[in-house]
Length: 291
Ligand code: MN
Ligand code: MN
View 1 (cartoon, rainbow, N blue to C red):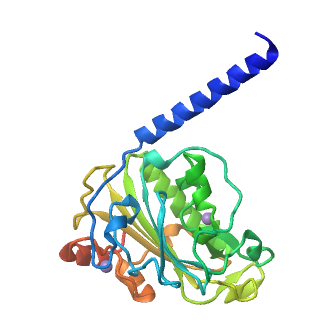
View 2: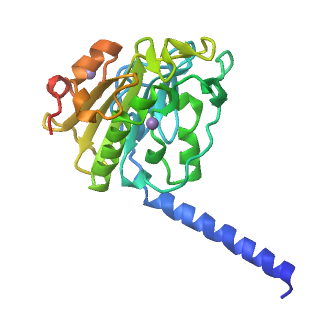
């Protein structure tokens, strides 16, 4: 066999092997096909496991400031005037975790006509981090998963001390829970106007194109483990936090920012956990996690 033929054979074998291992990875990931429905939730996206907890703002495919973006990796509501997501929602279990390297940030050009495209450069020199809502390390098993969370529609201007401090610690803690076997359903976003970044206070960056939220918030429902029929009861652990989007909090523990889900519903105006039966929802939402 000459060198050229050997090279061809090796390349072909590599492609086949990569293809096979991708297929194996896909096959290992349990795909929930729940019939989750809630008022206003389009039937077509109901089986998306990332939207198990419901559509907090009744986002739709045609409302530019409450635009429903449903991907296999997450679901979010995008706000065109603010240039950031209103909320993002995703499932987290061990099947999503891998170790692919971080990707380059990319503009999201899928949002539709008339929606300004935020680019990675819009954050340059702003004093705010490109803050992932769905974290990079929650979606790093396949190149497609990785790239999806580096789209700028999943990003908002986060004060470095928030992003790299208690916010990151809670993200790591979430993955610790997953490594212990848990399955999480998470909703996160930013709310209010104006944060304090490395260059001081700002209500917008990129000459008004991108809004800086005042707070970042997150709700995490902790289930015992992956299940085809996830059951949320009044005993289910729910972690809710609301953190100021400010410098100076880097060394604070994430636990300092625990609040009730009710408190987050009050500041955002959303109905969180809307697919959970009302009695259970009421019980879960008034509690503050203390574990
Ligand atoms: Mn981050
Ligand atoms: Mn609710």
